[in-house]
Length: 213
Image 1 (cartoon, rainbow, N blue to C red):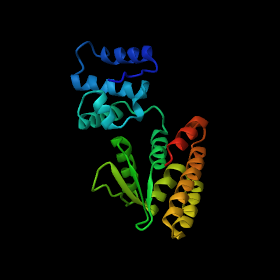
Image 2 (cartoon, rainbow, N blue to C red):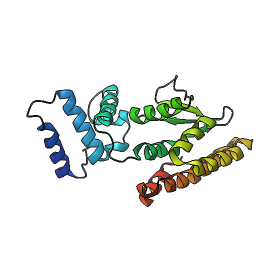
Image 3 (cartoon, one colour):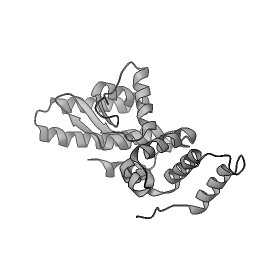
Image 4 (tube, rainbow, N blue to C red):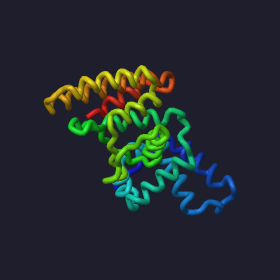
């Protein structure tokens, strides 16, 4: 089995002991310990980018259990980065696909915490995304997606997105649409990262561009 690579083993151990011994030895349940370990693995190892399926094989646990632990870890130990949702959503959109006949964008969101955050923002605006076929496979029309983008990244980014999508839907050839959608994602991610200001870095932009398909 592939070994887990921990980036900062000393800090991993230190945070584990602080939390585990915080209320006395034995105070935490097994589930609470598992949630703590999952949080620390997400924080200090390279497992954050792994799928639930890959982690289930590596950690020898069911995929549903891994999914549940990841979600509970996010809830109990919220991300320190206040722009976590905005950055994570960009990574999702970088891998998204476009269905021109239905004018919907399709993407996979394995992270339940992120998916509920997006759905919550849509619900607040009286909109919704379709994930009836598969809870992790999200289909959202371009108008609803624009509303989320406007809230997360501002009017300038949303207006640019709207303009480029209008050009995209006017095209008739599927091959041209696929190429244009890839260019749209490149342009959108550059603008969105810039809108995040000091919370974003050149490294983040390079990482996001590497995900574009």
